[in-house]
Length: 608
Image (cartoon, rainbow, N blue to C red):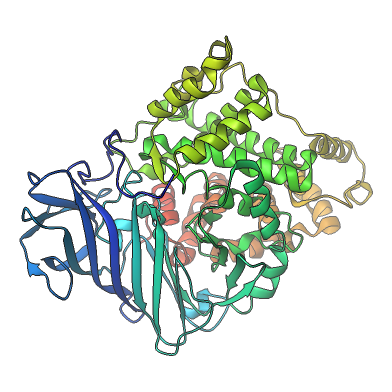
């Protein structure tokens, strides 16, 4: 199917967008911006080419949040005529509707604007917050933050192509979720094209002192100079990952697949921006043991980027398929026992989330009701791990060959389109369930998608390698010295499992023995540190305090930060005060995505 932009005619109403794309929708963007590190703003104009359902539509509605709208023109930037526009009432989550009056023959609209210094999608880093000597800028548009740096129809059900001209300081390189340069331009002006239509949440921009190293004809790595050599070695299997994914579920449709290793303040493990996945440096473990995250972001090139959830209520359609696909890639590359470890870790996370939310909470449904709420509240293990578990259950019932055929055809027949949950169930029935009598009754998709918790038809999850780790842990608890445990060939996942299985009341003496043997406190592996440090907080193990402070100040990944601050808050005596003191110091290094969660947990620090 050829690429096509715009919404699907039957797309459901998006509760997180003011836009009315069934009346007027955007189809192509020409973006011109200048990046100003001194004022921490972007300034320029966005020209939108429009698709109109009929002459009756009298206005275009765009999403905006904290944007200074200077002028709106009907037509192109160099020849447009000023038109009336209005910003609606401000909502703390949705921002404001930008209403633009149209003429019957209007086919393009230009908005001149600038961003606010505190725009939620933009992370401006000082040189000391990077691995080098230059400042850095990166965006994080998911879920509805694109509207804080671009007036747009900020809904995953609306797709558009784009071109851009970005002007930056001459010593810095600009990159986007588009065709990218591989070397500095002396004039600091960079031109980009994205010919495949994408939703606004996949708009991305990064500017910094970064260099490029190819890994194959279509893959490579961008990173700060000090980080690049280690990243090149860590991601040496990238081309093999892409080829493996293609073998399973069809051709890669985005031409290049490159990675950008961001500074540590990036709030997620990765972000699947087309052509240029953003990744956290916390996966640079030195042994390629954390690259399943890259497999996950690569899988989004099919699940999410190619076939996209129509609204954030349908988020499981992006993430459930992606987790399943990720683990199938890792199984093919590194074997089934390795993939089983990933599944077991994910399952443990799912059980923890279910306990945290409550087993009957509607937030444990796959299909969510996020109207009136920040869609980030739906970014939990439910969408990821319960979604994957649903597909594992289907795989067990119908067999891998049949499920693989279904998934490949699903991606192919809905390429560059959006998908909502109701339409997916209808497609699943027609293309798979109805051809296997009794399958739907055994699968019970309604219970999985619209019901709480984990249905009782889910297959068991286990890992032989983790069973061996658990046995070693039991042996240690029964008195075997840590130095005699069979840990020589353990991966990062096995170490994390070992630490997670430690008894809750492990004391200072026990942690001291483990640390003396394995040097956890000085580990360069972020996953191991994130599993170790909560234990040290709970036990009052003071030798790890400096490492804890350093980790909280350096790393901005929300997955790590939230449990560490929760553990600090639960610590006796001065735990809450200590947590807030550390947060006040570290908060400037975090992205808005992280601080929005942590402010709710800890309270926003005062300026005193």
